[in-house]
View 1 (cartoon, helix red, strand yellow):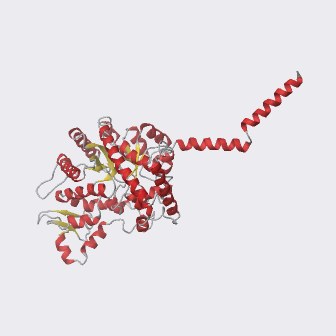
View 2 (view 1 turned 30 degrees about the vertical axis):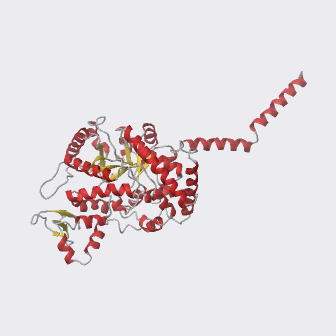
View 3 (view 1 turned 180 degrees about the horizontal axis):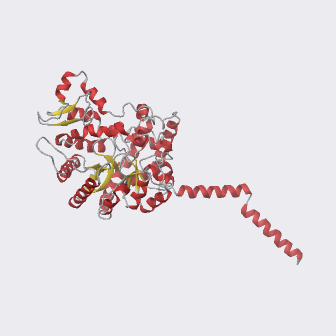
Length: 504
């Protein structure tokens, strides 16, 4: 009996060793399972392993080009304008430039085209005046170079006819472009200089040019054509409108309702000449540095616009520098009156200040107010509960890498909070924010290239980001199906072109 028990005991011990293996084998098994579980948390896990044969070939080429360019010293930490030409000449950029990108969900409507457009299209028109008094000591004077349209004799003090300035000043167009190119000196990242100052002045300088009806109609038409033809975008959601940001001509100011009608006319025209274009929706955007009374008026106007134009005006946002403007918490009493009645699309967490009671709290309030998406959301990676709720509730972040670098929230794009949020499964879409100021008007591939170079992104990731741009758009289910169907045709054509170009 003792002998039998010994045999049994020995057998059990031998079996245990056989199943568990050596300590190293146990560790490697656990490590493999741990990493697999971690990878399954990624935002793109549903598309990993599901690439077609052609997509797999293109992915191998994409990753090779990506890895080669990553060897370029400091490319993700260098101010964009210093590496723009190098990026534009790279095979990676060329591949991404032609790629169909689905929807674009974070774009401010008055900073989409090159500054040259404002000069050539706007200032050559009759009755254009520009504030050109560098010696003004009046604290109420507009920034130097501010433009607008006035009936002769009605222009404010310090404004001169653009045509006269052009005759008097050599190379006037170049000088004016330099005045409006507010970040042209930001070629070294310097945290002692706040880029928000010149950044904000851009809009003051050009908005009365932009809102002049003849310029506005041309500008919006060119924007939609550029997005479709050069950016590879099939659908847009624009930050737009705003209380008393009215379109005008020399005879009258038009209402916000008439402005929506003007946009509808532009969209109809672009659809007629670009049949695959999926359209535009507008997010009413109010500057956050306003009184409670103005905010209430803007909310009422936005809400009424969503009722009258439900397929065009989709909701409300607060824009402008968060660190110097009012927080969402400040306006909660007014916002609660429309919560559940009108969708919100808040800029929130566009800051490098965080902690309870700081600007980063905008993330918490945006989530609690059930925003549909969050613009930028840099602070979300520091607020794990908000990040988890956003993930659970399908609140996508609109990430704009080069804008965040240009405004010096992120000096090296590899350190962008989006990298960790993507790894934890939070939904994200890529956008270009204010391309006129950032000098990225010619292509959306600048932001895409920087994301691919900086984060753990391959073709499966790219497909997911594009799907997100459709899924988290404010389109109807039928519109989503149509956008996805059209995109799939363009995607296949793009894959075939890449395969031919690289002999795959």
